[in-house]
Length: 407
Ligand code: SF4
Image (tube, rainbow, N blue to C red):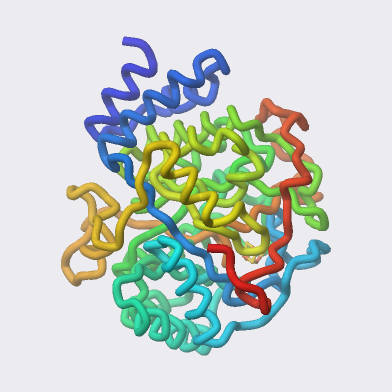
C-alpha cells in the first residue's frame, strides 16, 4: 500500500500516522499534489462532511505588546503601521461580533495583545462576553489573552467562554529562536490550564518562519498530544516593520502540503486555515477547503482578509456549505464545544491546548527574529517566488476604527 493509501486508511479510522509518514507528506512533489489533496479530502469528509466552520476575529486590544514574538506585528519594537488601541468597550466589541455572526460566523474569537491578562482584564472580557451572548446566546466564544495565571481559565469558563486559544506556533526545539520573552513550556502550561478548566482548546501553528519539516511535524504531533480541539494553521504574513519582513518562504503548493499533513495527524480535529490564507494560498484557497474544515471570515487581527462575501462565495462555488449554529463541529466521539462546556462531559482525558502564545494567533507576522537568523534555513522550498507584498494589507476597518467591519 503506498503512502497516500496508508494515510487515507488510517485517517478514515481516526488513527494518527507515524512521524515518518507525516514527513513524507511534506516531501511529496507538485506532480503528486492533487493526489495528496484528494487523500486528505477523503479524511476531511469522513469526519466533517462538506461543512465549513466560520470564525470571526475581534481584536479587543491592538499593538503595544511587551512581548517579542518575532512573527508579530504587535510585538515590542514593531515598526509595522498597524492600528494601536486599548481595550474596546463591551458594546463596541459586541457590535463587531454581531457583524461576524450576521455574516455566518459560528464562533467569535476575542483576542487581546499582551503577555497575559490581569484579573481586571478578565473582568473586562467577562463584560464583553455577556454583551455578545445577550445579543446571541448561541454564538461560541473563544478567548485569546495570552498566558494564563492560576484560576483565570476557571473564571473565563464561569463567565461563559467556550474555548481558549493559545498557539504553540512552532516546535519546542526552535521556539527560543522566535521568542525570548516567554517559553514553549509557558505556552503548553496555558493550554493545559485552559483544558483543565473545561474550556475547549484551540491551539495551532505558524508555518513559513524558516522552520524545517521536522519542526512542523514536531509541533503538529505536540498539538495532537495536547488534545487541541481545533488547530489553526497560520501562514506567516511578513509585515514590514517586523524582524521577519523579508521572509517569503511559502508557495501555495507548500501550504497545501502542510495543511494535508496537519489533517492526517489530526484526522478528527477541526483544522482551520488561519492568517495568511489569502496571501499564500491565493487562487488555491478552494483546494484548502478540501483539507481544512474551518476558516476565519473576513479580516484578521492586524491585516485585512478578502471580503467576507468573497469567503462565502468561495465556499459555495467549491461545493461546500457553511456550518450552522445548531450543528456539531467535531465528530460525535469527540467533545464538541457544546458538550465540553457541560460539567462532566467533554473530551475527558484529552488535554486540550489552545492559544497562540501571547495573545494572538492569526496575526501573520513572520518568524525570524534578528537572532533567529541562525534558525534552520533550508526548510522551505519556495524561496521568494511567493513574494506578494501587494497582498499584505494592514487592517484599517472594523474594531478600533469608525469603519464597518468586513464580514
Ligand atoms: S503574539 Fe501576542 S504576545 Fe506575542 S508579540 Fe504578538 S501580541 Fe504580544
